[in-house]
Length: 401
Image (cartoon, rainbow, N blue to C red; front, side, top):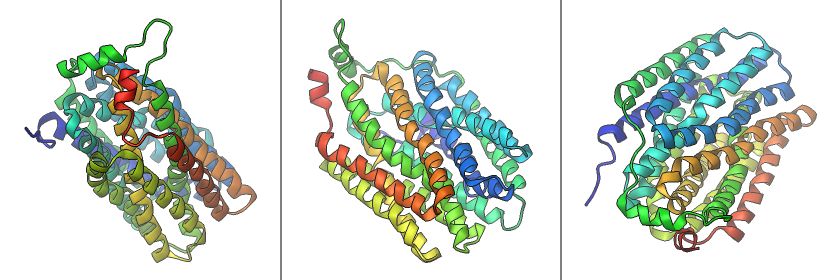
């Protein structure tokens, strides 16, 4: 029997994550330009943007762990409210320390946008449609970010940067209200009967590590290096484009293509990985992403960058959702929130280091060379995936170990 993925609380989760993603996306093309307009040095801009990732490292596992104990409702309400406060704070901040603090807070709250829907969908969606459902979870977030980036870029043509931040705060507040209305009474979800046996068999004996730990480390390592490029792209593509004479509205379009294009492809790519296996889809995605990053450094203008963002959109759709699906398949449901949170914390190392290292390379060389460095790092992820990722995941091997 089928299950409708767009009804009830599943639909509400999609709307909540989309709205908060829209709010976050609005500031993506604006914040780097705003920081640059305040004459903050490139290396410091990189550190400010990287602070977001350091907060993810600290907090993402915690949200997943907490959701296993109290359910997704309370963490969802708190984090959506926090995002609204941070967006308003961007509009009020004027000093470098304030932006460091706000970026840290942004990471602390926004990082729950991954583990909470992943965990909830992993609980309520049956295994045979889990790849598609997790693709939907990623789509709702990424589509919101992409549309928000477009709105922020276009809005900056007519309004001040600060005004964009305040509008973003309004969208985040709407997501918090919806979370309160629909999820305030949702507690821990009981384990499915058909998964209870898997959970028992996956439970480590005394003195042994969980059987899913090795798959977790492999997929998190691949994600770490791919997120290195993604975070650098979000932080520095607006500045690279501006250096090529591209206007804020066009910058917003570039970021929209990356996010929205990825969102539109995630569900079809999730279905494809369900049929042909995770590894071939992932390898093609990493290759496409590497070529896109390198191409940014050489692109002469807007149209070339537009084509490369489409390539990067496909790469995003073919990497993160596939890795999350692999992890979902090998993790017992009673520990899925913790596993997703730990996965997120490990990949967040890449999100933190990407902008920081990119800013450093930019400060001593050129911003184009910063993108070439990101492309070189992604080759490491290709090697890990080719050598260590199993063809169709570790489901049987991990559970039976």
